[in-house]
Length: 314
Ligand SMILES: O=P(O)(O)OC[C@@]1(O)O[C@H](CO)[C@@H](O)[C@@H]1O
Image (cartoon, rainbow, N blue to C red; front, side, top):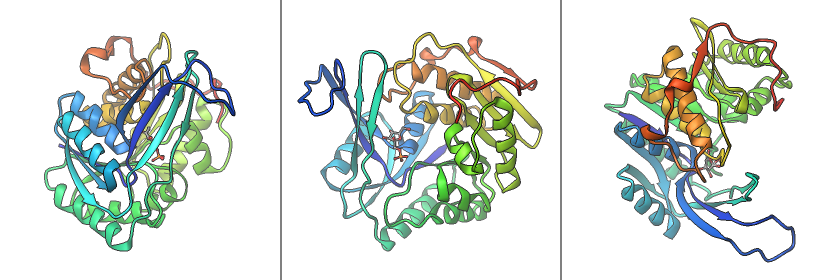
C-alpha cells in the first residue's frame, strides 16, 4: 500500500480559453474540476496503476467535502482530518497552444492541534504502508520543520518516505534522511543555491542533496528526462513526447510510477519516466492509466549524458 500525505490539498479547476487577455472578461470554452494537491495526485496515479493507496489530507468547508466526494468517486480511500478553514481552489487557465497559467491559493491556516492531528492520522494509517509519499507545499500554520518531524516519526515506525517539497521544508527534512526526494530542476537549483545548465550540473546538485541526508534523489528535468542518483550511482531516463498538453501533475505521476514499481533503482526510474511522459500528453492533471503508458519508448542508462545542456536551464 502507498500512503500519501498532502498537507495543502486543492480542488484544481481548469478553464480552457482561446487566449489569455489581461483585463478582459474571458469566456471559457470548457472547464473541469479535479481533486488536487501533489500527494492526492500521487494517490490518483497509484490507484490508476491498480495499487492500493490511502490519502491523508486535511479537509475543510464545502470545498473539502467536494474533494472527499471526488476522491470517493475515483475509489480512493481518504483519511481526512477535519479542519476549520476551507480547502483551497487552485486555478489553471489553459490556452490552445499549450500555454498554462496557474494560480495556487494559500489554503487554510491550520491550528497547532490540526497540524498534530495530521501527523497522528499518518501514524494510524501507516501500519501496512510500503511507502509514505509526502508531497506539496505546507499550508500556513505548519512550521517548515513539519515534514522533518513526519519523516522522523515515520522512520521510527519503520516506514520508507518519499518527499516532494521545496525550499526550507525540503532543506529541514534532509537531515532526517528521507528515502527519496523528488525535486524538479528549478527546486534542485534552489536547494543548492546555484543555476543548473547541464545534466551534469543536476547530477552534482543531486549528489549534494544526498550528502545532506537524502538517500536517493529522483529529479525531473522537464523535457530533458529524469535522473536517479542513489548509493549505487547515477541513472538517466528519457522518453519521446509527441505533444505536451499539460504538465500539471506530471511530476506527481512520475513519483507514483517510481513508487508503484518498488521505488528503487533503474527499473523504478523507467516507470517514473513512462508515467511522466504519459501524463504530459493528457489534459489538465489527468493521471495516466496503464493503457496510456508506453514503456517500450523509455530508455534508461547509467551512462549519464553529463555534458548535455538542459533545454530549460534552471
Ligand atoms: O501549492 P503546491 O502544494 O506546491 O502545489 C499544488 C498543485 O499545483 O500541485 C499539483 C500539481 O503537481 C496540483 O494538483 C496542485 O494544484
